[in-house]
Length: 389
Image (tube, rainbow, N blue to C red; front, top):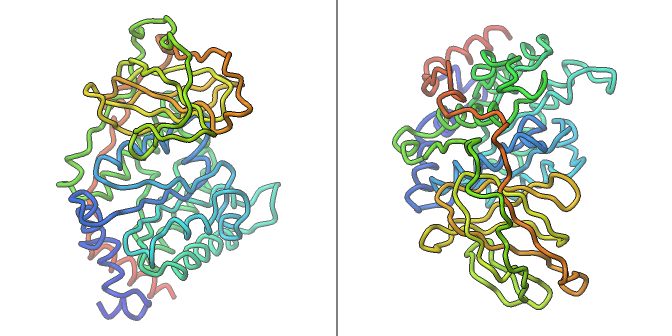
């Protein structure tokens, strides 16, 4: 262990990121002993208009009592994240981290948008420093937080793929941080349009593949057994194509996103009708209000949770019905005085029969799940780095 100490990485740090420390965070969250926040910090390989990735993070991690925070943004770079440029930045991550970070894990995946090209004057050394310095800046503010470095997925830029992977492992070794290699699950499906949207971004199926890999790598097996890997909504014909909202009557107030219960508030309007639905289909929702959170309930009308519908175009939004959801209620607007209550509210099943559909087995095909890195492997990496210096 003396080699580790020389490099400034303590045994406590290694245990936090590779051993019982991380496992305990997940176990405490699952058994309700402590809250755990999982911050997803990254670029469009995490959050964009079509990959549905953050929603999948939320659904999967919430099953074991973990709260997911979306700190990812299309176009974001390590440099801009560190300098608080754009919306989702280091400051948002710091604000979402309670205390000194004792109950927070941050998944970090930047670098693609920092890479030298015609749009910037960066060097490869700059990129290395942006990544390392931004992580150190976060840990300086939240020294007890756990940072997981997720190597960006395979893209069409082979040199960038190789260099960023090297950077991540080197920085991980220097700082004693856990590295999860996303090139492993994406290498074998790169270029396959069933998994990739283009030469940089995974589609919704490739994105699920990444999240499944991260969870297998990160979460202890006994806790992971409690996560149901739900099938993507099948492209079978929906139960009906008729309008599901037969009464557009509104009432003052809103449905709480935390409890699902109605709350009085004269500034808000909610749909009075409870909408009957079936799980795992996609809904098209059309209204002119400014609220698009959908509250879902099980067959006994017990609250499951809410999902924010995604804009398709104009006033048309869509949302995937969660597993075990049979009823839905909706908030319509938080600006009741400026809403035209004579307008109809439309909710219909989306016809997805012509869409691509992959089963969970298809999504995870040829993906060998490897266990946590052995401590000896970590020490050998650190020793090799020290010898290189």
